[in-house]
Length: 418
Image (cartoon, rainbow, N blue to C red; front, side):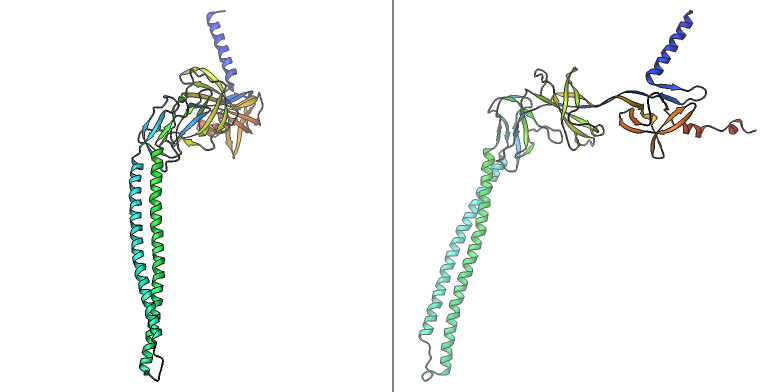
């Protein structure tokens, strides 16, 4: 056999092998529509996600609940530093509490002075009103005692004047008694308002004192300090404001680590608890660890401030923890196996077409193409699983043959007419 014949034979074998592997062939003659030979195969869909390592268990470090309102960080230990039991990790600025304490003491002093003044004025007024009431009572008794009632001795004018004096004395006594009662009510209301102001001042003093006693967060046990990022992805720093009860960081238990990764919202369909994953550290991507999904966030959220792309947080349990290389916060890459089906009918995505609102493929029969409605199941970026309408061994078009027929010129027009 000549050298040229050997080369030609080898080239023919390579072309035939390529056609078998990719399942793509072309019909003979002038038909240049690409075809695909349908076969049953395995279908896998994997999702790639990135994230960080986190401890399965950790002791949270929160701003003191005894300190009401917001706290401003004055000093903060470095992220990742080794800490000992009782060591100060966070110290808050006392300025606001000191100012509140000064204002509270001033308000308390002012309210006490006003209460003392009101008490003195009330006592003086009551003394005067009681004296007026006693004088009116004496006048009434005198008028009643010396009332002129004998018409044979006194004139009608004197009798009427005596009767009017008695009525006037009675009205004065009633008026003095009523004014004393009203004044007592006003004094009680004024004392009530001043008591409220004093209680408000005492509340300010108490809150300020509690805040001054809660200016430090100490380590409950030995470990590594891991600061917690906020919703914008930023670490706390000096000058940051933390509300009481909010978490500043944590001291993780390094005995067991987990991976927290983030899956794009568009790729999250089908992801469920219990699915397996392969996890690798960014520092050593050659080594992989097995894991499975523990939980998935209910809602998608953005990871970066100002970037509208949303992700689902996924927590992965690792099969083992290597303390020498696995540290909290280390970046990881996970490949989650969402689907792994065996012996199913799979076709390229470009073999599916829309026709009158239905999904169809064009199956080749002889030199003709027949539209066949199909039922699709799972899909990946380039392949789709068909559950109904196709079977292995059939050939389908990878381009819509009806469009080729519409665009093909007629024989009459191509020859210019007869």
